[in-house]
Image 1 (cartoon, rainbow, N blue to C red):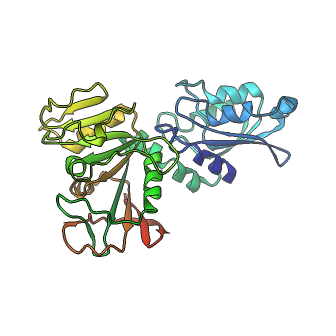
Image 2: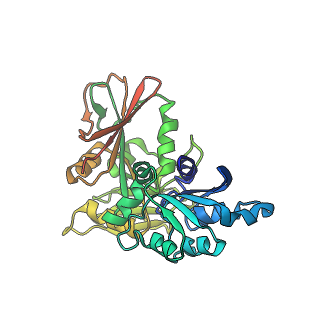
Image 3: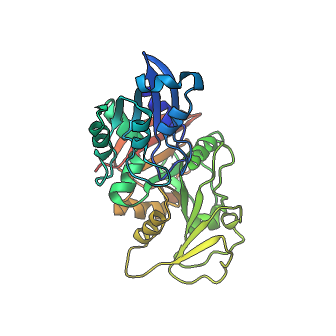
Length: 340
């Protein structure tokens, strides 16, 4: 099962809003084949594992045990049900880590396999399996994207200076930051960050796809001259409380925010409806503080630098459960998860 997890992680950054899943076929304690869900809309892990069995060994499939990190699907979506594949291939022993978190589906796939006389074992390394699909679970249960906050702060707890771009972290930390972007479906920033830093919001220093860009400009003051509005083949979601006539290009999807509902709730609704499973919020501090106040975040990644900035814009203050610490040079990156 640990191998299934390793395989599943290869799909992170490519399969959302679907969950990352890995599968391994084992015959007489040896791996016969393995597979993982490689891209959204593509074959599931079980299909990949079966298809990867060499032709001369396909007769061993019915004699093998199938390990899967997540309960096999039993409904038709972009691909046929994996339960049908398992039954058709004659596999008699299926072992999974965790159940599908969708209340309407959870356990149904396993029940279907058992009805066909297939031996099913569930709950193997379950906590690790659930951890792997946390964003997917949030999508399914809470009907919103999984929200990651990320910012850098000085040794004195400041995130920047009003109207002035200040680079706090070490150059090598940019590689880590871009790896975070590559694992997200979309990246959200506010108007002040666009005006001050003029970021491109793309992945340049790490291999992977660039996230879709989400821009929150409540007062409608931005123009397309900023890098974030570049037409590079990716859609841009633009949210404002007033109509901004300067943004007319076809790749910019504009949404007018209603005064009768919280801005962030409206943004999340639109993104969820557009299959944004993981949302990375990079700035600025005022936007992140508002999100923290709504208690709608899931993880915060704080880059604690040794920069001497001792005044200006205070970094957000967040409370939660420590999940990781890592170092990039003198920068300490702390991961915090919301409790509840």
